[in-house]
Image (cartoon, rainbow, N blue to C red; front, side, top):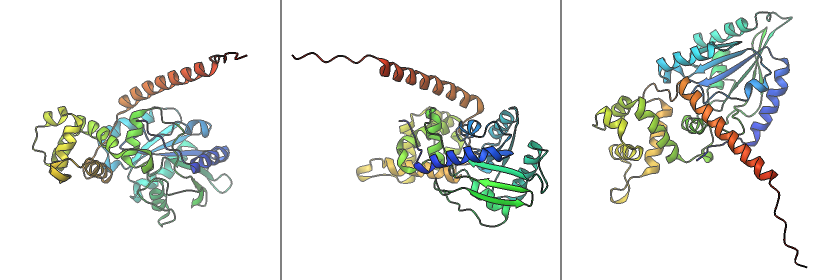
Length: 315
């Protein structure tokens, strides 16, 4: 299954970012620390015309700290880019964002040349929470559902620091299948764009490979860790269902119920600190996805250019 979600308001957001990028100094892109590569918008560099970028790896308190360190090193090695990790609800680390912006654009500041910053990110990544923390008040709507913010907002963090907040935006076509599943598991796409059971099985496949101990601790499966890692995904999900009472008539597995349970446990963080991808894994997925997409595009062009068969002359 290919997960895609690009509702109408995202077209408007894309246009708004393109226009706003002409007059901003720094771009803040917020990423989900549990899926930093999958939550990075590949369109952003194009839309913002190569402006200095601050990658804010949010929700670090829910992510694997060792993998977060790998991602920070990955992004900090890129030109004209800084990366910091934080929990958007905590004031002191969030304030480090302002200092980082002035590092990226040292010639800005003061009333004559105020800092103009555009903040972007996928839906449900925590932008509104961060903005409320920076302002010290509730000015932006927050929630655990994708698509809460629908219009651009201009916010004043200081007399010489303007922040332009845009609605969460994905990209028109997700070419990396693994990213689609990770985004769905995190809550970044609308519920009508994916099947809970498919997403839960993909999520479980990643969890059992790297976080079997967390699965055992949460669900009390009574299985050795090597057994957890080697069990087929459906068998492992069935074991979780039996432990958590997701059982239907006659002892059958209630697949929808256990899928929702697993996704909810991941999103809430009760499974522990988890990151679904490393930079190396994501780059491999990306290369494979881009190659497959190029092949699809070539086949599409071939079909379009193929001469149509002439209808027989019935005269």
